[in-house]
Image 1 (cartoon, rainbow, N blue to C red):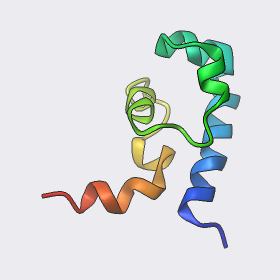
Image 2: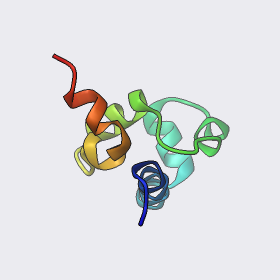
Image 3: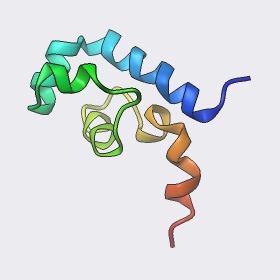
Length: 72
């Protein structure tokens, strides 16, 4: 069974497959090497990517779901 962090790693691969690493870096206005270094999509970048409309933040980072929903 996958842990949520392992699932987040798989979702990073899915996002890069959808947009392409170079294109994603241009969309986020960051360098391509920065994207290449990601193990998972960083939280702020997950938020930015969710604004493109193809992925929800909870989908990109399921490992953060418990943390973000626990804040009151």
